[in-house]
Length: 305
Image 1 (cartoon, rainbow, N blue to C red):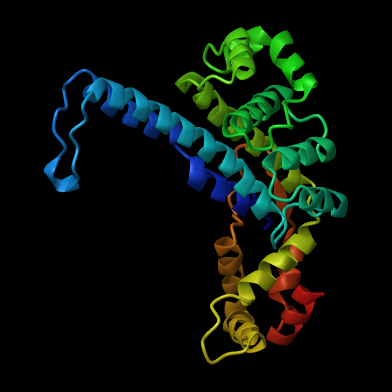
Image 2 (image 1 turned 60 degrees about the horizontal axis):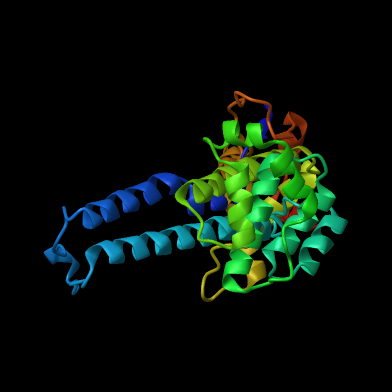
């Protein structure tokens, strides 16, 4: 029976940061609207904080601006987290050229996105253009990496596909978006929500593409090796930890070992359930059987090879 991996660990980390961000932003904005309309006039006692604004309407508007700015940063950071996690073992990015390109970008998410564009051709260009524009907009607003403007070909995508942009991103107006970017005005809720939507689209597409291109045995080796190296006890060396954890699985009687190996692989994110859509990575039954036949000593040699 094969195993499937339809969502990677980096994508899970991305979703942990950005999962239902739009809902949470709206919740906060609803609360600020209540402040602005005078529905809320006093701070709840359980907050144990002083709050007596001279102008509640002005404070609510400024708070709305802060929330949207922070949401913009959070969305961009979530994409950055995905790319950083994608090069850690078990590495989703296995191409040496792609890894080198990402490494050379340093801390710049803008340059990391350029590396993605160079190494993953034919990505959905509309979400990619939205993300490039919003990253450049954030950089301009913060006077950070200000020399890195949105590439002209992405601006052209937004202009030439204005109708599709509005259809896919809930009425987002290309003219207003590009005008706001040029003027470096504060972003609106719709623009931030569109960035979050675009980030989800990009990461989902990139994740599936990277999963499908995996050397599955290499990835499985790295996943097992990382797992065996975890949970080190204070009195153990790393080698002792690996052997102890290997014995816990591969040291079992052959009748119990197969099930133990499957449980470990499920803990690592693999599933026996056939995805509704095309699977990303598929571990063949032959490779699973090969892994189940290992001993503690041989599995360490296999995973480190």
